[in-house]
Length: 373
Image (cartoon, rainbow, N blue to C red):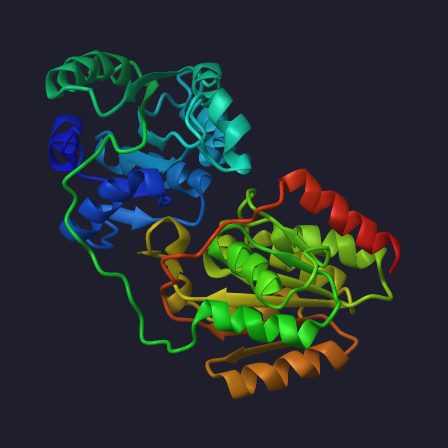
């Protein structure tokens, strides 16, 4: 189905969401049509944030908003759906558009498998009526379902369109770029060189894929790394849990700007606990690059100031490799919590692979390595 027709049938003029590769056609259409405009389109920090923003839109306008997300975001909406939107509370109608990663019978990465199995059940449990859209879904079927949904929405209940891979088409081409010059894979190569045999916890997306391939290129073991392939926004908390239990060992967290934004409260917890053996590296390209390149707000905020306000004793920002190497060395030798923000370009090589070990193998190898530290 053409994405423009899809949005016409829905008939809303306000969208907020967290980008998803399965919804790239929709994301590009919204960026081409509205850009980032608080009146019509906002890319928020996480899916719960989106849901609350949508509720505010409804309260102010009386109209029905749309929240788009990957199905991994269902966990983030459970609380506001159950305790804010639900018709037993404030009866706020919202249309959810959910990218169906890990759909049963469709090959996908391990972090999507279980989420894919329970996607429709979670919607049902939240009392959200759903309709699956695939490549074969016709405009007439969509229009008929939307008529049904309007009656449901009028009662203060919520509905969802669940989007299969390739179901939305004919999106405009949108180029995502910034003015930064440092390439993320090269940044990770410098981090690996500086960290030596120190454990690294890396964030979801291309950063972990590039870390894995850097180890392959260096003929190094993968035992040093925990790849947080799912659970976006939680790698720094995982790193904190490791660091406090391995106090004599330097621990590194390689994070991304979208992940930091998604659960920024973790920085406050890190800053309050001040593990003196943890280095938090935030690679900031101001984009949700792994799922298509749509912007985050991270290029408009001061990550260093936020870290310092959260209690990090040391926080710096770098935009060149000379400064990066200097700050990596200083953080390695320092016995205090440190943050290094690295300004990064958007883009990755097209032949970037994925980890060839399973998630369970990764966990076990990492745990075995930690035992001996």
